[in-house]
Length: 327
Image 1 (tube, rainbow, N blue to C red):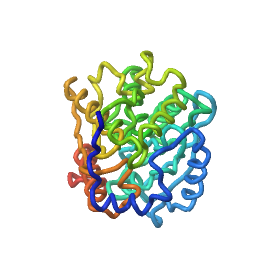
Image 2: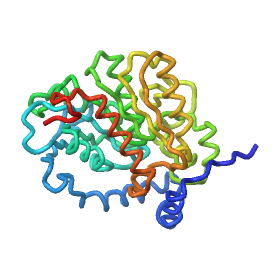
Image 3: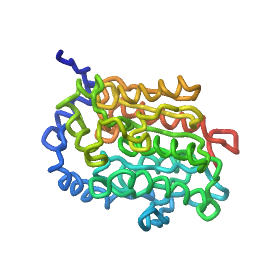
């Protein structure tokens, strides 16, 4: 049976059309070097200090196979321990680094008064599961252990990520629960990559369309899991959609576009949290393709998505001045 895809938002569809020669819906294993090279060329020029509003430093944390690079951003002249947002970048498990996608969280840091820690985890296929998630978990543990040095409130840590990083953030929340690890205040999951089975209705609908289609998804999951991808024995720490127990997790914010591969698995994850008695705020942005707010930041839907994330953080975090901010 043919799967009819949902329409793209008009503004976003125009953006996709304009980027047709640059952004392909389909990534194959042969495309990985090109994908990595394109990201590397664009990221070094970013002003992570936001014009001097933040101090930004590069540090390392001990990891399972050596030092893990981290970027730490903090508002200038912050005088008290601040909440922390521990961020995991996107890239389908096969590309990206700690600078990728971090401008959004750094803007939250400047707006709300947060410390942002972005982790540069190892990538597949050179470093398959569990390397990426174990790096992310080790960086989180280090962040909490170094709370006094970093100026972080260890009881107000939110894990967050985009795409593959959203899946890693969900997995780190599961790990922290199961290992008795750092207490987490929340998990902010933006279009998270959660299910290696790659067989949902939305994956079938969007095959060959938009950004990061079903073939791309297979590329990422196979790089991470090899022949185990889609099989019966995949760990929930690799693919959180495999978790059978979603109880006792921190409150979640989950958002996704209606016109992207991850839609149905993200909706199912939110429903699983609710069914387990947990808290989840879910947004399905109508006509949104994967990563729409990054590729079309000025579009109305992108502005609404960013505002919803900021509003959730503002409600979640413990504000000492009582007015929705630290300061």
